[in-house]
Image (tube, rainbow, N blue to C red; front, side, top):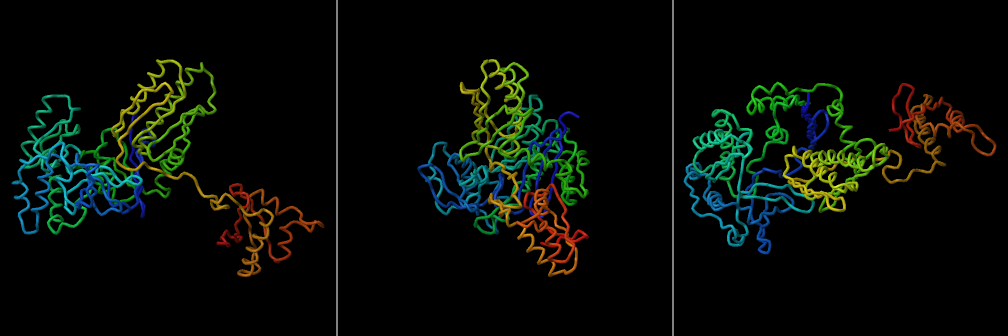
Length: 523
């Protein structure tokens, strides 16, 4: 089946890993440690102004994170005064629902105002995370709150209903707009998403009511006191991804946790009735990511060097300000005309770069150094191809044509840090130091381990597992008078049967001691 999608969710005690496969190829990967982060995109906090920055027309806001969050004047929103009045008037003794519906929007925030004229140090305010902390920077905030559903985005303290431009039918646009306006309570606005096209009134009504309930439930926390706190959080990563991506092309959603599988079936039955049957609980003994060959794809895709096709490869470097991608032809055989060969490599590279940006969630500026081409039509065709392969990327992006030096500049929306996974492993012999023990004294080190083992279990046979190279050294004669091999000397010295077991997977000086039954003795 063309374009089929699988969502694989691996739940462990300390982390949750989510992999999106398109035609069995990894295109998106998210990994979160349980309770590791204090804020994510979409989370809504009651924050407190910590410091005003008149020169930047912005403020630092305390939301309980290690780094103070950043709020610019332009992100306060036109109805900031309504939110501010609501925060000040909310308390546990008031009728918050009645008070909310009676707040007026008469005072609109000026577009070109000053932050110091609106905020004061210590002022509590409701804020939403629009960008997660990246490097040395704290979260980016907005004060115009929105709650996203599959079909509708709810806007508290708004008075407009907007319809997605991707819905082409004017008749359908009008139907949806009138329908949502009729069911929206006072002081609420909404954005109708593309997924709402053709949906019935009951489906939209149920979703709107659940979003309003989520917003109004947060008032309980707001009423207790005005300390810094999380009011509510976005749905978890799995449901957020399904909310935006779920369609008929999904074939499987595989989860290795029974409770989560049940929750997902309920969630999908609400947003896409009939599709909950694609959720499957995995009970196999093999690790879930190994079963779907995701581990192998992660190891091959997240390194500095990423192979493409027929020997070509990418080199990806990450700096504070940007990502740099270098395209190399590698060992690819030049069996065609040179210019055409270069164009083919660049097109293959463009496809992999588009995948890598989604996979690593690369944001900000991305500079791609393609292999130089002479013909203008090839340069234009490559630019067009890059736009086509990035068309399915949900993040906002902009692509510029190739410069005369063969560089392509891409900007991509950055809302969270790029995913970085260490694909290297520590050498078991040098422990990452780059140095190994002297081979001249390795026999003495093994002999000490044998002596300790013999003292603990006298008279018992010992099997020493070693690499073939070390085995050859231990079997050969030693010394001026060729006193026999090191192995034969050990047998005489300790009076037990000591045998060597060669393992080609072992590094040069790696060695382990076992009993005859296979029990590890030197741990």
